[in-house]
Structure formats: structure tokens, C-alpha cells
Image (tube, rainbow, N blue to C red; front, side):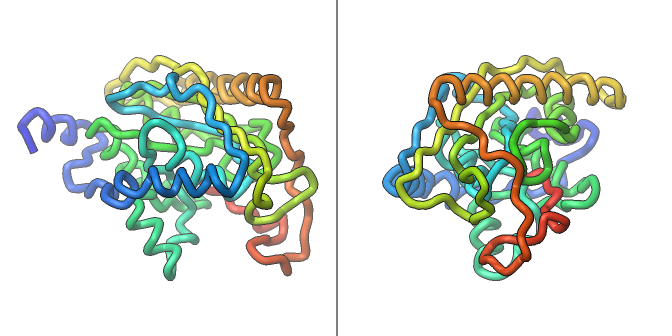
Length: 256
């Protein structure tokens, strides 16, 4: 690591002692996984040109289905290290997520370790992904958490809003949509963010969070208009007996 690279990790919050998430599987196998996704579903990726070709980027999207996170990571023009709920990081799935460079984060509280891992990615010119809604739902962005805004303010990374449509069908709580379903992943125009030195004040984070929320809403609305694929509505109540589905009261609160 060069002196210049070390200096950015010394900035507050320091990431000098934080390991970069794994790269090899995400970077090397991403094209193969993307090809599988395109074969299984009628997948359309829009606006890829809106993702800067190099430098740090924060991608943010609405969250309607389990497939949103994997698609964010693999089908865009650049690999994405996405914040993912820590409960998934156990057993074979956990090993896969760790090996593919995804970042575990607590669903119940601010997770400094997850924030620092994402900052490490951004400070080394990579892409970190966040779902500001924290949980799967209607995907309408009624609320947004401030994690993505904080990452952008610390690093000055542009924020690219994304729309996910078709990853959950209306009235369904299924883990994945059936084969052949039309899925749309759209990238909106990036938001330019000015880097803020420490301390980053709560009103600055709140203001940028609202910009991000409105940008995602606009990207979703444009994707619906262009594709004809609608949002699925609220996640239905279940008794928790279906595979991959839990009661609505136990929905994850992660920034995946």
C-alpha cells in the first residue's frame, strides 16, 4: 500500500486496520452468475452507463425481494460489495457471502464494523451497495436510513439510485420469483456528493438521506413507466411455514 493510500485510511473514521472484503469470487465469477440470472429470468438491465467507470460509488435501491441484493452485486457494470443482514452469514450460505465479498451488518442497530468495511471498499475505489429501506417491503421508499448518506459524505462518492422490479410478484412472499418472470434492474443518474470532513453532523446526513430517498423514488417511477412492470405492494402476512418466509413481525431490518 502506498503512502497516499495509507493516508486516506487514517482519516476519521480510520479504516487502516480493516480488511477489504474478499474480491476474487465476486470479481472473477460475476459474469458467470450474471449469465445464469439472464437465462433463468427475463432480466433487463437499464442505465448501466450511469455508473461511473472508476472511483468510489455508493449504489442504493428499493428493496422488494431476496433477489435484489444478488442482482445489485452481479448484473451492473461493476462488482458491488453490498451490506447484507448478518443472520445470513452462517453455514454454506454464510461462507458463500463472505467469499463473494458481501458485508455483514446488524439488522437492529448501527454497525460500526459494517460501516468501516464499506468505507474500506470506497476508499480503495470500489462500489458499496445499500438498501436504505432496511427491509423487504413495497419498495416505495416511505422511509430511508442514513447509512448510505454517511458513506457518501465521508468519501465524497457519488450515489447511484437503483430500481428493482419483478423480484417479488404481487401478493407473494416467495424467496425467489418463478423462472421466466420479467425482472428490471435500472440505474438512475448519479447524485454528486461533496466530501465532508469530520464531524459529519446529523442534519447533513438527514438532508442527503432525503435526496437519496427521492432519487430512488424517481428511478423506480421511471423504471415502472418504461417497462410496465409494477411494484408488488406490501409483503403479505404469513404464518412462517413457507420456505424462506417469516412472519411480517420478524422481517429483517437490515441495510442489506
